[in-house]
Image (cartoon, rainbow, N blue to C red; front, top):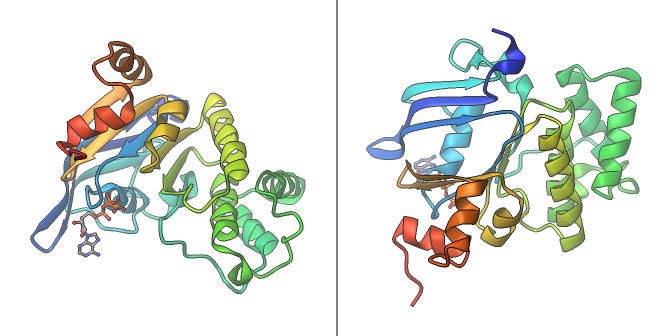
Length: 251
Ligand SMILES: Nc1ncnc2c1ncn2[C@@H]1O[C@H](COP(=O)(O)OP(=O)(O)OP(=O)(O)O)[C@@H](O)[C@H]1O
């Protein structure tokens, strides 16, 4: 089958355990090109563990992960070239400048020469890091570090973007600019799994919302289903849908 027709992400019956704790419990999820999926759930629901298993940074205890048709167990190194990942806890190359870091990731993804120059320029502008390009990443503020990590994830661009709480600490203007860029990336055939607790933002930007509770898929709502639920008046917004799905209450 042509790789273009493959789902960007295909997880089947994924299980991740930490000793006796089951963090991801028989999770199956498919994401196709063009989808911008909000991944929500309470603290400890298993979102980061799922992303860790997709990237291969964590070893699954069961099930399978495919990215753009590549099986994670059979292609543990190759699969990472197809994923842009911004983890919750950033791990950057502190001894590189912002620009060197982007070029390093470009080289790994096979984006070289004039194309690399063009992408690096565009991404530095997107994140307003042009002036800081020659500063060491370790000297960046928290928000700047997150923005350079987002730039690095976008180089290629890869077939799948995994963003784990990637808007935390970003100023409102950067948030808006990066949001628009991500929507364009999806419109042009990219696919995103974005974990976030900023539900009003997800309600606005996502084409689908997946709710995870105790490692299990609790709800999987398309944009149309989400709009219909909200329009019905039973649930005023995604917050209300989330509270019902997770059984949480705000007194
Ligand atoms: N390295 C680890 N060792 C032991 N338990 C872990 C480890 N990492 C995560 N866990 C546990 O696995 C469960 C899922 O954690 P995970 O970080 O995947 O949740 P999350 O949905 O990303 O949470 P949050 O919204 O707080 O980021 C939690 O109970 C957590 O304590």
